Image (cartoon, rainbow over all chains, first blue to last red; front, side, top):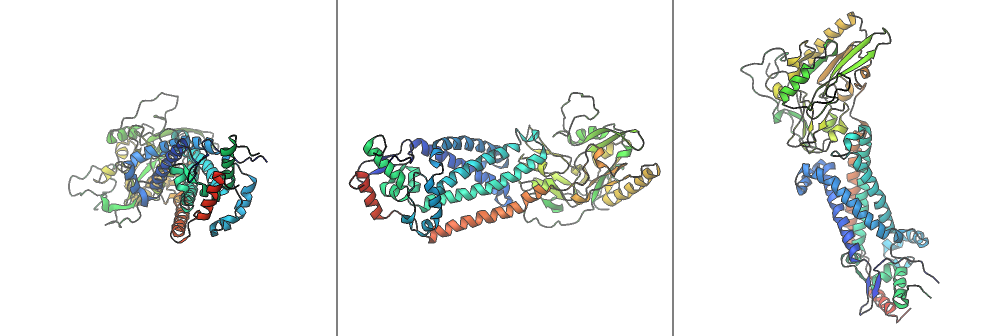
Length: 230
Length: 319
């Protein structure tokens, strides 16, 4: 039976003792960490502009004027960087039949009964949620942010539109931060995930436990070359 | 009077016995500042009164403003209207706006000239919106002033202002507007525009005196047939320290879109109010939840059995 589970370029099992599973290519990791650093800088500078109690964070950016200059440009970098990630990841994050089942068993996941979870491909429904919500939130934040970017755009935008843009921008920012908290914590809670994005590798056991369909597909690929099951 | 000689705009400034006011102890509001110490004294609230019916459109006020503030507005193209420059700019803090209005009751063409500029709201939207501590301050005499050392040029004040007054400079990236000549007022003088006005259409003094003066003017205007003459001191922003006498106070909009009922825009209030509190609670709870779970929850670890089985599968020892 032909398995449609997606494997991304660079995904492979390297034979050995123990075998090593390659999950993220160096380019993907670089892309991810540029996005992550940009995102953190955006969150810090955004919070400084939003909460007076956190305005002191502007010192990290060389003062208020420099922070005000940098924040929108960091947004541009984020959009470019995330767009590349999007191109890499969108196919693997399409919704599949097992995802609904996975969501239904989320209670088991949190309770530590991962063996009751359905077998899934390279990304689980939680990761897909992070991916798609960040894609939409970043797009929304970029559009609203441009509308009140004082240096280049705001003078040409009606003030009532800017007011709307600025409150939407703030609300979306809260959601972005919530999703980032979820994302970072999930990477910490599921031991081995952080390493996947740092050195690109996971253990066979990790792939087996968390992404079994993807793991099986990689095993098939390592045997058959084409990756097609027979 | 200690802090405010009466009608200082027309009288000459005191030569002695006046100590400079408007220091840090006179602040009643400071942008992005949680706990401001109470002011050390209460200054007499001051106000500028602009009597639109007495204005002859000479622009002496604009010239005086440029002169005193040492700004240098760019000459612009003449597009067939008297308003010049076309809008307030970072170098033009006050602007005579000219409107031609056909009075439907009399069929007369009326030339309405309004001196536009910061209204010095008692409840200033710019200050509410400003994210930079101390970049916008309000003194107990009513003056709302920008501190350019603290201004970061974000333009939030523009979003907060119900009168569309502040302008951010492209040169130094700081916001500018009328200061009500706070530097002159601090020394007992009136604003430069009021000093220069040849018809005394611009008066300056204590807010009480200015209201009394306005009453006289309104009575006079009513006796001349302007039955809707009145004072523009809008409640929605807690009153203003720049007020207008309008001959058609029932229709502020005819004076180049002077707002009927200005107030801090509800979106700005929500953005700076509920959104902030809900946001900090949501983010705080989420952060606390993951920290607690991280400390006390069980990490999701691969078991040795799973590792062994998976290694076997990877090697092909097991399906």
